[in-house]
Amino acid sequence: MSEDQDIRPLISRLQRAENVVALTGSGISAESGIPTFRGAEGLWKTYRAQDLATPQAFARDPNLVWEWYDWRRGLMSTKLPNAGHQVLAAWETTIPNFTLITQNIDGLHSRAGSRSILELHGNIWKLRCTQEGTLVENTEFPLSPLPPLCPDCGAMLRPHVVWFGESLDPNVIQQAFSISARCDLMFVVGTSAIVHPAASLPLAALEAGAAVVEINPEPTPLTDHLEFSFRGMAGDILPRIDRALQEGTRAGGGDDS
Ligand code: OAD
Image (cartoon, rainbow, N blue to C red):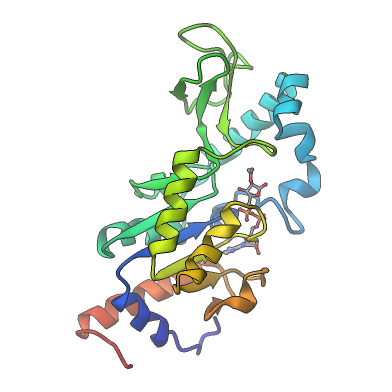
């Protein structure tokens, strides 16, 4: 979105929308200092996903996998939510029927104050027992011992995240699809929109007739299909949309259609 780009048509849609969804990816946390996966500085440029983020890698070398996740926990623990996370947290209370769906595991949406979040790929601050499947919340860094052990049965814990080749929690992804297919406005923020099934959610929204709004400094495979595509940083664009929404609401509608 350039300085002079007219966002009134979007504000007007947002004021009329009955069900609003935001789908976020690692790009929303980039301005907090957390690396994305793809792109020049992306994690997958330096690390091989098949060595670190698959069930096979964990079975082969749990220490190596845990060292990587412990390093990422250390990095994330020093980072704070940014203005993009904060706007989405505020929208949970100011926009009726607002749903936040994220691919991120960093926990920054909840640290910004979002309470109801569909976490498609899990959460790095939760550990799961490899024997019983029970979850433990844990924000310690560094983890000790590494690999960590289940407090109940002593089996090894694993990060409660979705690895390549694993299925998403069926309840979470079903809920995400049903909400996406019912929404009339979806924000797609900071995702390359290439990893499915998450990348299918905006397609479900489009198919249902929703307006989909992309916020990303780069084009994605979605861009050409969208009514609204804002080329810029989430921490800049989301606050601008939010300010315009508040001004429009105070002015008693702002619907120029
Ligand atoms: P990617 O690294 O694939 O994409 C990040 C996107 O964020 C890119 O399109 C960037 O252009 C954009 N971006 C960068 N900075 C931004 C900013 N300040 N504001 C807005 N956008 C910005 O990350 P994801 O799409 O999240 O999965 O990746 C999807 C999944 O692939 C991840 O959840 C992870 C990964 O492998 C698993 O680990 C299962």
